[in-house]
Image 1 (tube, rainbow, N blue to C red):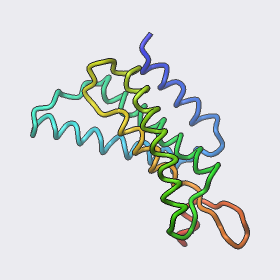
Image 2: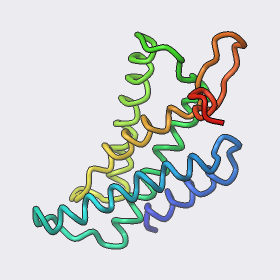
Image 3: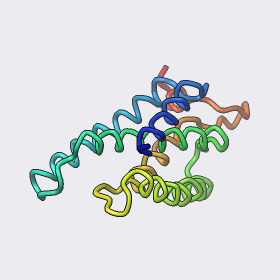
Length: 153
Protein backbone atom coordinates (compact mmCIF):
# COMPACT_ATOMS: atom_id res chain seq x y z
CA UNK A 1 0.00 0.00 0.00
CA UNK A 2 1.23 3.46 -0.83
CA UNK A 3 1.87 5.57 2.29
CA UNK A 4 0.94 8.76 0.45
CA UNK A 5 -2.61 7.46 0.09
CA UNK A 6 -2.77 6.53 3.79
CA UNK A 7 -1.51 9.92 4.95
CA UNK A 8 -3.78 11.67 2.45
CA UNK A 9 -6.82 9.86 3.87
CA UNK A 10 -5.72 10.79 7.40
CA UNK A 11 -5.39 14.44 6.39
CA UNK A 12 -8.80 14.38 4.75
CA UNK A 13 -10.40 12.86 7.86
CA UNK A 14 -8.73 15.43 10.11
CA UNK A 15 -9.95 18.30 7.94
CA UNK A 16 -13.51 16.92 7.78
CA UNK A 17 -13.95 15.83 11.41
CA UNK A 18 -12.08 18.54 13.32
CA UNK A 19 -14.13 21.56 14.37
CA UNK A 20 -11.02 23.79 14.23
CA UNK A 21 -10.40 23.28 10.52
CA UNK A 22 -12.28 25.94 8.60
CA UNK A 23 -12.04 27.44 5.14
CA UNK A 24 -9.07 29.60 6.16
CA UNK A 25 -7.12 26.47 7.11
CA UNK A 26 -7.86 24.84 3.77
CA UNK A 27 -6.82 28.03 1.96
CA UNK A 28 -3.48 28.04 3.82
CA UNK A 29 -2.76 24.42 2.90
CA UNK A 30 -3.70 24.97 -0.76
CA UNK A 31 -1.68 28.21 -0.90
CA UNK A 32 1.45 26.56 0.51
CA UNK A 33 1.03 23.68 -1.94
CA UNK A 34 0.57 26.00 -4.91
CA UNK A 35 3.72 27.94 -3.99
CA UNK A 36 5.70 24.70 -3.66
CA UNK A 37 4.42 23.36 -6.97
CA UNK A 38 5.48 26.54 -8.77
CA UNK A 39 8.82 26.45 -6.92
CA UNK A 40 9.62 22.88 -8.00
CA UNK A 41 8.35 23.50 -11.53
CA UNK A 42 10.62 26.54 -11.91
CA UNK A 43 13.45 24.54 -10.34
CA UNK A 44 13.07 21.97 -13.08
CA UNK A 45 13.45 24.52 -15.85
CA UNK A 46 16.04 26.78 -14.23
CA UNK A 47 18.21 24.35 -12.23
CA UNK A 48 17.37 21.05 -13.96
CA UNK A 49 15.77 19.38 -10.94
CA UNK A 50 13.65 16.29 -11.59
CA UNK A 51 10.26 17.17 -13.06
CA UNK A 52 7.52 17.00 -10.37
CA UNK A 53 5.32 14.02 -11.15
CA UNK A 54 1.66 13.86 -10.10
CA UNK A 55 2.66 11.65 -7.15
CA UNK A 56 5.12 14.31 -5.99
CA UNK A 57 2.43 16.99 -6.28
CA UNK A 58 0.08 14.88 -4.14
CA UNK A 59 2.89 14.34 -1.62
CA UNK A 60 3.39 18.10 -1.40
CA UNK A 61 -0.35 18.57 -0.79
CA UNK A 62 -0.41 15.86 1.89
CA UNK A 63 2.68 17.22 3.68
CA UNK A 64 1.45 20.80 3.70
CA UNK A 65 -2.08 19.76 4.75
CA UNK A 66 -0.84 17.65 7.64
CA UNK A 67 1.58 20.40 8.68
CA UNK A 68 -1.09 23.09 8.71
CA UNK A 69 -3.39 20.72 10.61
CA UNK A 70 -0.71 20.13 13.24
CA UNK A 71 -0.12 23.86 13.54
CA UNK A 72 -3.82 24.60 14.00
CA UNK A 73 -4.13 21.92 16.71
CA UNK A 74 -1.05 23.35 18.46
CA UNK A 75 -2.53 26.83 18.16
CA UNK A 76 -5.72 25.68 19.85
CA UNK A 77 -3.73 24.24 22.76
CA UNK A 78 -1.39 27.24 23.06
CA UNK A 79 -2.82 30.31 21.27
CA UNK A 80 -0.55 32.95 19.78
CA UNK A 81 0.07 35.81 22.25
CA UNK A 82 -0.93 39.28 21.12
CA UNK A 83 2.35 40.95 22.05
CA UNK A 84 5.79 40.07 20.73
CA UNK A 85 8.25 38.63 23.18
CA UNK A 86 9.91 35.58 24.65
CA UNK A 87 6.69 33.55 24.70
CA UNK A 88 6.36 33.73 20.90
CA UNK A 89 9.98 32.63 20.43
CA UNK A 90 9.59 29.73 22.85
CA UNK A 91 6.29 28.74 21.23
CA UNK A 92 7.90 28.75 17.77
CA UNK A 93 10.67 26.41 18.93
CA UNK A 94 8.14 24.08 20.54
CA UNK A 95 6.24 23.69 17.27
CA UNK A 96 9.07 23.69 14.71
CA UNK A 97 11.56 21.30 16.32
CA UNK A 98 9.09 18.40 16.82
CA UNK A 99 7.57 19.15 13.40
CA UNK A 100 11.00 18.65 11.80
CA UNK A 101 11.23 15.21 13.44
CA UNK A 102 7.72 14.23 12.42
CA UNK A 103 8.42 15.56 8.93
CA UNK A 104 11.51 13.35 8.63
CA UNK A 105 9.39 10.32 9.45
CA UNK A 106 6.76 11.47 6.96
CA UNK A 107 9.42 11.88 4.28
CA UNK A 108 10.82 8.39 4.87
CA UNK A 109 7.35 6.87 4.66
CA UNK A 110 6.30 8.78 1.54
CA UNK A 111 9.51 9.04 -0.51
CA UNK A 112 11.83 6.42 0.92
CA UNK A 113 15.61 6.65 0.97
CA UNK A 114 15.94 8.64 -2.26
CA UNK A 115 13.88 11.74 -1.58
CA UNK A 116 13.64 14.41 -4.25
CA UNK A 117 11.81 17.03 -2.15
CA UNK A 118 12.40 18.33 1.35
CA UNK A 119 9.14 17.04 2.81
CA UNK A 120 10.38 17.49 6.39
CA UNK A 121 11.02 21.22 5.84
CA UNK A 122 7.69 21.65 4.07
CA UNK A 123 5.91 19.96 6.97
CA UNK A 124 7.66 22.13 9.58
CA UNK A 125 7.05 25.35 7.64
CA UNK A 126 3.37 24.49 7.19
CA UNK A 127 3.05 23.70 10.91
CA UNK A 128 4.60 27.04 11.79
CA UNK A 129 2.30 28.92 9.40
CA UNK A 130 -0.74 27.02 10.67
CA UNK A 131 0.08 27.76 14.29
CA UNK A 132 -1.08 31.36 13.92
CA UNK A 133 -4.74 30.38 13.63
CA UNK A 134 -5.85 31.30 17.16
CA UNK A 135 -4.74 34.41 19.09
CA UNK A 136 -4.97 35.09 22.83
CA UNK A 137 -7.10 37.93 24.12
CA UNK A 138 -5.70 39.46 27.29
CA UNK A 139 -8.80 41.13 28.74
CA UNK A 140 -11.34 38.35 28.37
CA UNK A 141 -8.89 35.43 28.65
CA UNK A 142 -10.34 33.66 25.61
CA UNK A 143 -9.04 32.85 22.15
CA UNK A 144 -10.21 34.44 18.93
CA UNK A 145 -9.29 33.87 15.34
CA UNK A 146 -6.36 35.78 13.84
CA UNK A 147 -8.68 37.62 11.45
CA UNK A 148 -10.62 39.22 14.32
CA UNK A 149 -7.46 40.11 16.26
CA UNK A 150 -6.11 42.15 13.36
CA UNK A 151 -9.26 44.26 13.25
CA UNK A 152 -10.70 42.81 10.05
CA UNK A 153 -14.34 41.88 10.41
